[in-house]
Image 1 (spheres, rainbow, N blue to C red):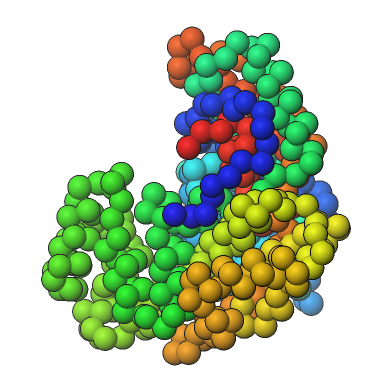
Image 2 (tube, helix red, strand yellow; image 1 turned 180 degrees about the horizontal axis):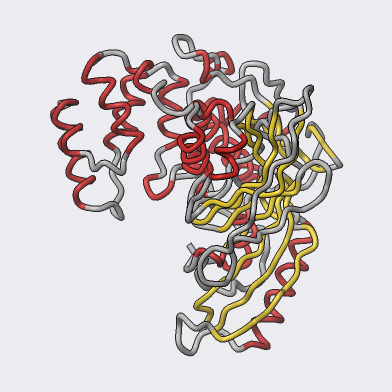
Length: 416
């Protein structure tokens, strides 16, 4: 469904579970200056440690306030929304370099344009901490970072300690040759795995299909109330009734529905009710799905991750297409594969210019098909207090921006 099929490593998987507890998954952003951010407010301790925030005098030539934003079990959009609400202005005034996991402790840089300093200093949230203020001139934008460091605990492992240590070391050693750099499951929309499918409908110009797919596609794991609401809307297309049935916590769906109640055929306008960076995710997710399929086809053809004639290389590593209007396809067998993926999806590069919704157009770029974890370390192996008789292992590693820790964990654990 998301194109994540093959394993690159052959080492036996250690099994286990991730994200059982929020502190089991910590992400520390490494800005372009190379200085890793540190989590100070949240960690494997109870509650939040309060950090005093004292903002220095604003220089006349600088209008961007830089802060470190540490968050606990919130996605980046929601954290930014809460800060904007407290500071009494639009979310558009807040910039950041990367989207970070929800079910995790994460720390990242944000920028705020011309804030009320007193309101910033008074800001309080149980799940967000702001610290280390400084002033600058440039708004932070997506991609304006270097790497991310991950510290992750895997639980519920049925191995003896010596075997677990040996197997993990062997797997990490094997990864030094690189693993398939799949876009991770979270790229495709949580339990429903619908984001890339909605993106495809937009790229094909099927705006009504895209909106209805987003609103009505079910998932077995969803609560009964939302499952019934989706089913009813799919059958009736009664947007007014749906606004009463969709639970309030499904705020993005409700924003779309409220617009459709007033303008029943304005599907583009309805989707524009969502935050801009969320809107872009849909066509980008479809690009990501196609990229995963390129990797799979290379493996099927036996060339795998190694460089062959016709490849576009960076640091001697082959790069797969993230298709867009301006994409130049590879040549040789890699080019044949890229053409085949487009043909399988009944796509032309020109389709990525989305007429009627230009914000969703994709220009195209490339991404390395091979990923290596930097500086991987086993931090500790202990009894798992949440699963009697089982072990847990904590490890850390660093990845370049835009890559997924779950890709590394999948190779190590070899579980669904």
